[in-house]
Image (cartoon, rainbow, N blue to C red; front, side):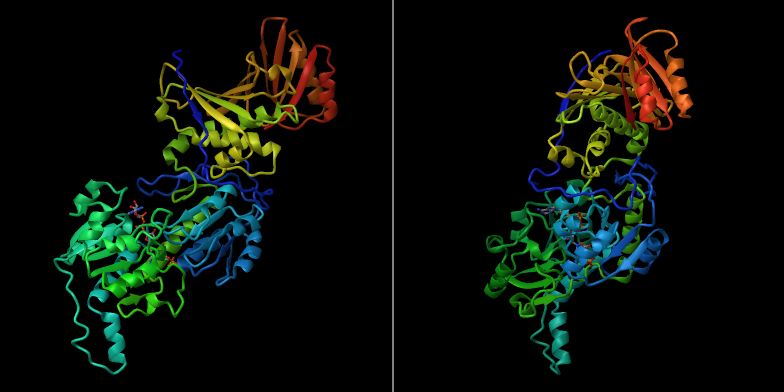
Length: 600
Ligand SMILES: NC(=O)C1=CN([C@@H]2O[C@H](COP(=O)(O)OP(=O)(O)OC[C@H]3O[C@@H](n4cnc5c(N)ncnc54)[C@H](O)[C@@H]3O)[C@@H](O)[C@H]2O)C=CC1
Ligand SMILES: O=C(O)C(=O)COP(=O)(O)O
């Protein structure tokens, strides 16, 4: 065996987070094992597992903003659906404690208070659209609440609205319409500008930006784009040149904004950047109001740097009717209509309903926003190891003497796979779940595992042992060690002083294969009794008959010994929980030196 090791520290999900965690047991869900069903095919999308287990009762989904009928029908097949629109923040906070999922659009602020008020019941927030800037993602993660969005169904609608605003702005459609309706006929006042041959800078070359670029090229515009993360070949493929931010804004006749609102993009267009633009530039914003410093835009419009602006989105929605920006004669506005086509709303509703229902079932969520993305095929391959990982965590922590405090956990994966060919994030999350859930009321899942470990001061390090041999199976064994603690089962302490348990997957079933320095072999189903004894004939019979008298079914027994007639550890798999008296009677067998019952 060639051993090479590397240590990975658990990364923080968000180093800026401080705050307290207030999760109580989930009201309606029993979270037991991971459910890893294949998701409906979505090309090359990546997937994430939310949580686990079956539902004890029909979940409740609160739909807080208008959602297309097809999506509502899908939700109703699986859940109780409460459509309550225009809730005040207080009303939302009150209602949320009775809900397992919440669906919103851009008009509802899903704040930290919402997660705190949910009492741990809220498992999924579905954003029926793209932008998730109205959801407090850090708070969602801390509370183990998955956030999913519907990222594809409104792309074309948003792009078409961007083009509609571009053309309407260039030809003064809105102002001219209002003036004709007011009885005027001002043909000279509303002379516009042409689009053909003009340079359009698409800022944010993602899904919407790309569709806008495609359409603008069809209108004969010269299209450039700025996006620090977009691949140049995707831009080249449709004849668009990727340029720097400064180059884009300095050369553009028209600028169309399509980036998300993030701390980096907030007020990206401001006094300084307006100052670098070509005089008379025209701006379209169907992204988010916050990417423009709105007061600076008013100044730029007044000074003529910006000739016109067409805005679908605002920093505060709805904006004040007295807003100088909204009332500016060179500005046209729409009330956040980018995604509002019949087709897009039906599509978004179906996309989000499928995502929310899937996530509530513990299936793979393809559009998770706040959890590690793990490909479906990787998850399905790791499935038995995921179960093994959680059970090893549960076993290891139950071996710790109460009050010892678990601070340092080392996980060792032995595998013939190259290190970057083995994604251990799900395994680490499940070990964390196994370790933390039995000793707290915190519900741990893939969303909050790293955060919860960090918050509780549990440092989990991972180590790889690279084995020779076939990398066909992802793993040979997983070992969990807890350092600097005392054990209620002294034999679980390894020669190096840590509690140590190790397991493998055999024929698809997780097995416990080592406790401390003793090799055992017991399948990790039901529960386990571990006894240390002096190896001698008749022990299995004695223990078996005590359990038999109480009708406790033994599924498996295995003895690991140092040498014949020396100390041995017997691992007994049981389907039912033996009584205290039976465990005491086993402990009183003269050869038995210590005994512990472990619930899986
Ligand atoms: N008005 C409306 O009703 C709608 C508005 N939207 C908004 O449009 C935005 C874009 O949507 P999609 O294209 O679907 O998202 P997307 O995620 O496909 O594209 C966003 C692009 O912005 C880029 N980006 C990130 N930071 C940037 C920066 N500092 N400078 C330039 N580019 C940057 C990203 O690399 C990405 O390519 C959404 O975040 C949402 O806020 C989307 C749909 C409807
Ligand atoms: O999808 C987005 O990001 C949008 O801005 C659409 O918002 P809406 O769902 O129409 O409130």
